[in-house]
Length: 407
Image 1: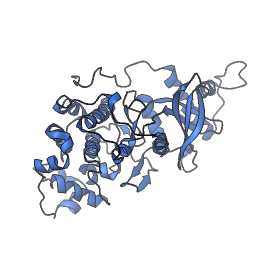
Image 2 (image 1 turned 135 degrees about the vertical axis):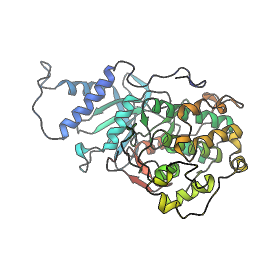
Image 3 (image 1 turned 90 degrees about the horizontal axis):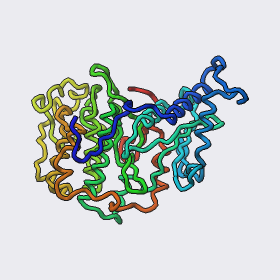
Image 4 (image 1 turned 180 degrees about the vertical axis):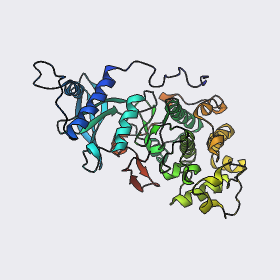
């Protein structure tokens, strides 16, 4: 596979290097938690002489837990409390400790979406994906995730703060970091399925980090259905709104394009109040596709009720895009339109996105250290991280916590 000119060096996807002791400790800590809160099992013989009966998993869990010191509370939600912390060996190296609350409503006391988040973050190691340093259980059997400390807030908060001035080169820099994160997820066969501005956190050095993998899952086999009830509505592509249960990385590409458009517009690009209205908002811009435009669209579950008797709509011309998104320029608009093709089969892949001329043409992306900064975003980080993994927002504020594993 060719390497993008803006992606050097090319990171290796998970599975290409030996598992580290740290990742083994994470897995053992999760296993220890599951064993302690589910039905009893026979005692393990894997104990160390003189350890008072403590098994290997417990020892490793304690060793991991002692590496970190918890400090002030940054945020609390229904499913988690987020604390400021640091490495015991280096108090200057800050972390965010997300303590998951036990919940009797779920097996083992923790949501399946939270387990998904831990599993994918253990696997994904990339500069533009939030880093999971460790997982451990506390004495009260709560699982704690030790995450990167990202004190500069999130991308949605940045574009909403009109005291912060930025231009096309800055948009290109943030957008490129996002696209590199999406590329790495897809190379690693992971769908994020909830890309949006407040899941994009900013580190102290201005690096953009993709977070909240609670709705993430691996790419499915071609014939295996997945739920269409994913991705916050403003960022949900038309195939999911029409009930498609067979999709790939193209759903993340649509969401990523919405985020880039928001940066340029400094407002939500495709806002609506209901799923039905969301389709209308999308077709106002992109037109109503026919079988010629999008082969197979009429076989989707919700096509008949939405489009069969609908009056024709044509896509907006290039002048519409130039008027609404002048900060992107023609190259950026061409990229965005390629990422938002109505037919998912015609949408650009993450690799094609990174090879687009937009990234190398003038203006060049702003250097990371020169990007505009938000003020104190640590509280916002706590607000973002305290959400349950995969907590969907139907729109701006209407939150829906997923409680079932639909796939």
